[in-house]
Image 1 (cartoon, rainbow, N blue to C red):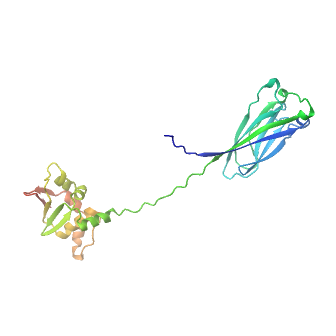
Image 2 (cartoon, rainbow, N blue to C red):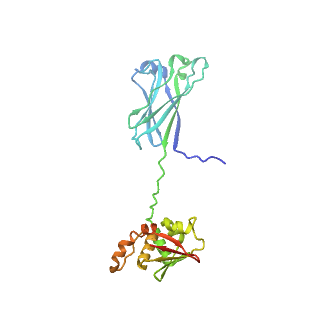
Image 3 (cartoon, one colour):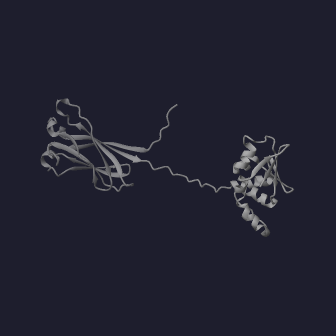
Length: 276
């Protein structure tokens, strides 16, 4: 199975031949400050190659450099210039090698470093005037950084778990335990009750658990307060109570802590009596 490959950059490359007729004459008559200019459009940018027959940096060498004329589309343009001598031949039939320079261009008139193509003294003298020319194969390579993929932000919905658990309590679907409180019954789910109360966790699933326990008797507690406790256990909120039960509402906020401190007494026939 082939490995997946993610491209982070794109390359644009263009190759052209540039010829300087009467090269020997140009090398003898041009000053070291003068250069021949070649315009070139690559990847939507305007470039200019500067060729110095008598290099200002070393007069016996032919030198070239690259200049960006356009505005950069991004903050920078990373490009390289490669140069290969095609004509005339270097003496002793030595095969020329490509010389290159890489530069990060930041704006118009920004120039690369200098390529010292060859020593003029190493060139064979032209046999005729027709042979007195210089041909260079130039390659401009632009390395484009690909734009980052747009990140889609998926909004995270607010939690509605308490609503679902509240509906589960009301519907009694899957209930596996019944609480008897002062003559009223309340169906619930052992796992949810146990997850919220270490005491009920021990009663239902601890080493002292009664496997068949399905009915729990709660003594000395108001049914409305117990209902508030169940609602708080399932939804982490306190239900709105009648005005005369304001004292119960204050107590309901601490019913979980109260449940954790209660003592459980198992009775016969699978009944668990809990004293508050």
